[in-house]
Image (tube, helix red, strand yellow):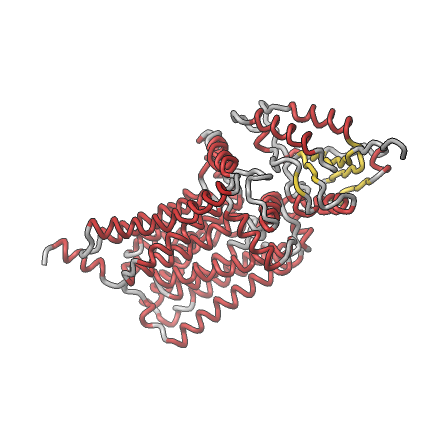
Amino acid sequence: MSKRSKKKQLQDAPPETPVKTITGDTRYLYWAILVLIVILTALVRVRLLGMPLERDEGEYAYMGQLLLQGIPPYQIAYNMKLPGTYAAYAAIMFFFGQSAAGIHLGLMVVNAATIVFVFLIGERLFDRFVGLAAGCSFAILSLSPTVLGTAAHATHFVLLPALSGILLLLASIESKKMGLLFWSGILLGLSFLMKQPGIFFVIFALLYLLYTLYNRADSSFLAVTKQGGLLLAGAATPFVMTCGILYAAGAFDKFWFWTFSYAFQYGTKIPFSEGVREFLDSFAIVIGNFYLFWGLAAVGMGFLFWQKTFRRQIPFVFGFSLFSFLAICPGLHFRWHYFILLLPAVSLLIGVGLGGLKNVFLSWQPRLAFLPAGLFMVILLLALFQYRAFFFQYTPNQACRFLYVFNPFIESIEIAKYIQAHSKETDTIAVIGSEPQIYFYANRHSATGHIYTYALMEDQKYARQMQKEMIDEVEKAKPEFLVFAGVPNSWLIQSNSETSIFRWVDSYSRREYDLVGVIDLFFGRDAHYHWGDEAKRSPPKSKEYFLVFKRKHPTSPGS
């Protein structure tokens, strides 16, 4: 036997892991513990189901609402994200209802499934102890307020198909069933369709497959090409089908402009040095009081190279960690919830760290092999204690204030209620600001496709064109209500922002509308609402406020 053949034979040998020695009874115990963890995290989420939707959730909910009405994405509402999460929201609201509680209930189901997939990947690569530690770690880290884990962000919906696709990839590699590769690709393609950074999980899966095939003695160029092609064909299918559907619906041009042309502008405007500073600032917040978990992940990276039984999985774990990190980097905008994409890799390393400690104790003093599990429980309880108010005490509104401070997500509900009570279902409204949750709560269509105004304030070549388009759409639609968000976080005005839209809204609202609502926002206090005639006598008294206008209807002749 040649040296190369012998090397490949050794590489193809099954990993020497403790999973082979675990009894059936112990297997059920691990599953029981995992189910208990899922239930406990679900109970925390149930407490907070009624948290008001924040902006991203409002966008997804409104787009999902339109889908349920048969209106395709990008036709009357624009955004740069791919439409997978809109479809996921539509499905959730179909089953659980069009409410914040229904949406968060759907997130709870998605998160529970993701926890199970983290466990299964850890179990397949290492053993059940590592898998359980990884699953439990992901459960608490993905619930953390430091990553806004209670909000149904697209990152949660990226992970579920990505991890299930990766698990199917591992099963295909182990069983050599090529048909599984196509379905693995389908799932990975859905991950990309949820949000663009999902493409990094597709790339990781392809490279890991090619690496594995290269190190097989029986692989040929034709086999590698065929299997890689199957995975890519599956990954491309959801996107190609989506393009076809949107083209048939007449929304393809808007879809392409917003998700690729404008998205490119958005993703290339942050200098690298500024991005590094933002990453460091956000990373410190994301770690928060979970620093011991991240410390265990660092220990896990060490054990990955030190312990012989773990080394075989270096290519997977290192590659998965690298591409998970790259998935949070596009555009160099490091929002806290972006780091959710990194948590499965971090959780897997935590599992490796605890598994490595367990192996050390088993070889040194078997009676102390329980200590790593005890250490994990202490770290878990400490984190829960430090965030006890958020997890166990705050009401949904208090939790919203804790996470989002001065953002008007609670107030959006009251504004939407007023609009809904004083308008018809066929009326349109226009929110001049970035508060798409108002459209969802009011169940009224937007008079303009620009449901965010951030893009209008950015230093990018389409900003002036977008402002003109928004103004033209609003004037053409003649919305029944006009809502102006005098909230800095709803605009993010820059020093070089085009500001003509503010002059327009002042002139247009005075000419065509009556002031019917003034909402003063106060830091740490409930907002003050002034409706009807009282609004005209109550100019804003706070620095941040909403103005609500109702269209003037001239008295008809003879009335």
